[in-house]
Length: 352
Image (cartoon, rainbow, N blue to C red):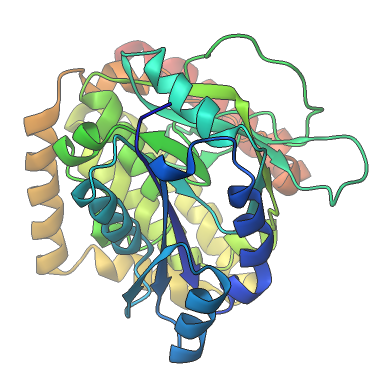
């Protein structure tokens, strides 16, 4: 296949020493033409020692350096370098992964065969270390009507999936491919997000612009997923959840979900008081009280309006009300929060 592909990996602090070798080796085993495959490793807020380590351990990759740790900006840098070098397709891949030899080929084929799609997500399985049955990490992520994002089919047994099913939520940032022209037309990743929910933000823009998001089920990724790692950054997760709602949601939608937002916020505050994270939530609320941040939100809303071909409320009709995720499946969520949110969403969804 003669399509030129750019793969972007992001290193952050000690990630490279923990994860690079296995990821690199699996990329070296790709059956895709080596002449048409370039790997860009963005060294994000790391030391000179780590930068040298990357150059030594992955000499065929292009190593790019950034200093502020902004994950979104790091991906933008890698993608833009790939576009500058003439890439026909861009792949984002987490460093804590291993991929099957046909990964790149199948990712490219997914978009070659589905011209209406702008993004394809790989089938992402949990890394089992070579033992035990294969289980799903995600087959496409789900957007909750209050702005949360979570995986689909998490922990389920792996199975064959035919064709290229459409993902109605969003593509996981762990492993996806995107057309360069679409990436540029929607403005890339919003760097204000810094980290977390950036994949929701990009997928929503792509969906609003009228493109489909699909699953590439034959492009297999094994993810060394650690749930505890993804919940450490409460500030960014909560701030960006609200940022997503304020940038994308219509005023009518925000009005309809307001009571549910208050309910969830009270619950979050209660939990924060007992988990030592109260100050982080206060930081979240204070962010939205600053004039400069309000101006950024207004600017982003205007930019979204320019690219929108599909109304937000039509996309919102695919949002879900229950959080069904094995790692956080506690009795309060299962027997109180989820039923209440299901009932609320059932009522308000009719008016969207």
